[in-house]
Image 1 (tube, rainbow, N blue to C red):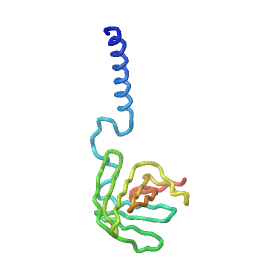
Image 2: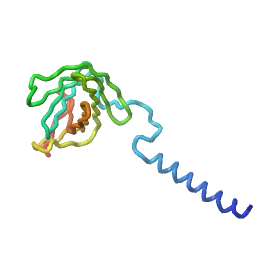
Image 3: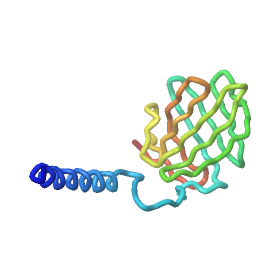
Image 4: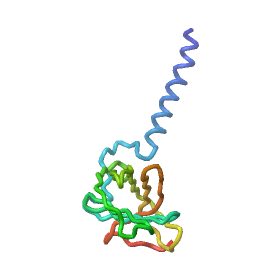
Length: 144
C-alpha cells in the first residue's frame, strides 16, 4: 500500500502542476481582473458584415441596426459590459434578443481591401451575424 501511494502521489502532483501551468498560460486566465479598456464607454462603434449585408452603430447606449431593406435602421437601447477580452452589448430589437460582442483582432469584411481592428459577432434572435468593427473617428482602416 505504501509503495502504491509513493507511486501515485508524485503522478498526482505532476498532473496538478501541469494543470496549473496550462491554465495560467491560456488567454484570459491571468491575474488581470480589469475590464477591457480598448474601447472607451463614450466611443462610437461602427459594425459591418456581409452575407447577408448588415450594419450597426453603437453610441450613447443606443444601437441603430441597418440592413439593405431598412437603410434608415432600427434603433434600440443597449447595455454595455466590458469583459476582460472585449466589450459586449445587449438589448432587444423589435422583440428579438440582441447580443453584440466586439473583440480586438484584425478583421476583413471579405468584400473590400480594408482591414478593421475589431471583430464583431451579433446574435439577433436566433441568427448569428459575423463582421468587423471600428471606433469612428479613432481607428484608421488599413488595406487587406
